[in-house]
Amino acid sequence: MNSSKNIYEKELLVKSTTDNLALIREFTRNSAADCGFSDETIGKIILAVDEACTNIIKHAYKYSPEGNIFLAVKFEERKFFISITDEGKHFDPANVPEPDLVQYYKQKRAGGLGMFLIKKLMDEVNYSTLSGNKNQVVLVKYLS
Amino acid sequence: MADFNVNLRGVGSVSVIDVKGYLDAHTAPELENVFNKLLDDRQFKVVVNFDELKYISSAGLGVFMAYVETMRENSGDIKFSNMKENVYNIFDLLGFPILYEFFKDEKEALQKFDSLG
Image (tube, rainbow over all chains, first blue to last red; front, side, top):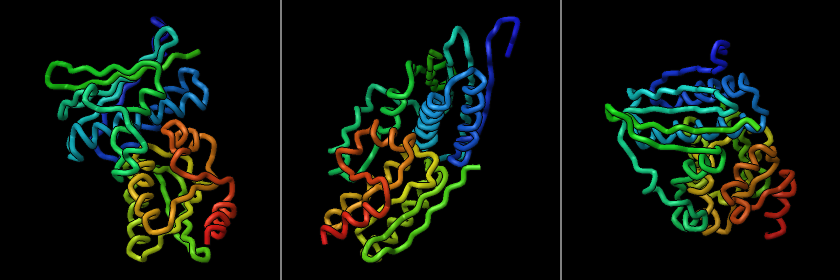
């Protein structure tokens, strides 16, 4: 905790492999716990971050293990921000339709569930493109 | 760290899959392998026992979506049992209770298959 500004900040840089998801979840758990969230809310934040990173590994880097995933946590004015940045293929979240489970059932597929979960689990979700061809999603949870 | 374990056992004509630990994009292929083996063996009646599953992400949920229709086309099904509340909540959030049957105990899920013959 940075006591002079009363802002909590923490960072993690990992390669884009699915075996790093456990590490990403642990980082998220510890950060959210440090900021005082309940176990139930910590569970929601962890799942949202897992889903966002899984999407990056799958879609932005197409399972190439050499990509970087950079996570930065900030807790300020009772808001928990976790930004997740990658340098992979850009995608437009507006082009991802809401999942329809009955349609998926018929088509034997299940895409888009992750993005839908992220939206349901967090208070704010903001996708953006940064300079240097970087993509960023910022997930926000309010501490009630 | 991310430990996941999957075990397959037969109870009468039903295959029971025990899942344990953390089911995510890294570990979901292990579960897919078990479902592929069931299809190879033409075993279509499946109960998944979640008693020791601590965590699931959409990659895990996607596995059940991918196989359930094939099981049903062959007079089988995938039924769920012994799910912890935090895991059930994720299934619920995505609307799974419309398409799948959930049971408190494995025994109840097995009985449901028996009662259908």
